[in-house]
Image (cartoon, one colour):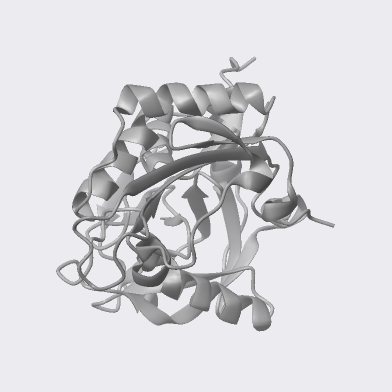
Length: 294
């Protein structure tokens, strides 16, 4: 049974101090809790090192700026704090969650004079999806919720409010027997899964992936595109309509948590877990663990 996150042991980096896990408190009238003035990152630890830490930290700061507040530390300080907390917690393979939010000094829409709090927690963690499902390929439904238009939200951030419809979509998918949910964009084109980018493979071994113009251009997404190009696999970034799904033979998700996860079905469309996808997944593991191919 999984230990609840508020019942765990160790330390959390909280406003530049190492605080006992159980002693980290957030007031119930914090602006970030009520009005979603909160940004975060999700990072993976492999063999004692945080993969692409600097890129994650840069995005963390970008998200805060887009949300109208400034993180009261430098990027170097956050990088060093992240490395320190995984060392203190003795994390070899796990997850890191930096988070920043507006405090409780003001409780209204306007919150110009709130303190910005920052915390970094880390814990041992294996696979986001069931390892067996990752081999067989996971199943997705198609969500009724759509990614909003880019002029209505700070779409290129990891801001907590953007994940409300992701939770609604994933809960609905799980209730119907699916693992995750495919979300369309405001124009009705394929966007992403609830917490991962999506790729398709056609019969010519070409990869197709949606243009990230209303959803996050994931760090893992960019890494996998680079891997594919190094293997001379063509990658096309374009608008993809749901009607095109019948034309693809393979599908997979990418994300810090999902890594490279094959998809076997989206609604009534079926896909094969092919050698191309397995090869990309294997290559990704070699990179994150800094191992050399035999």
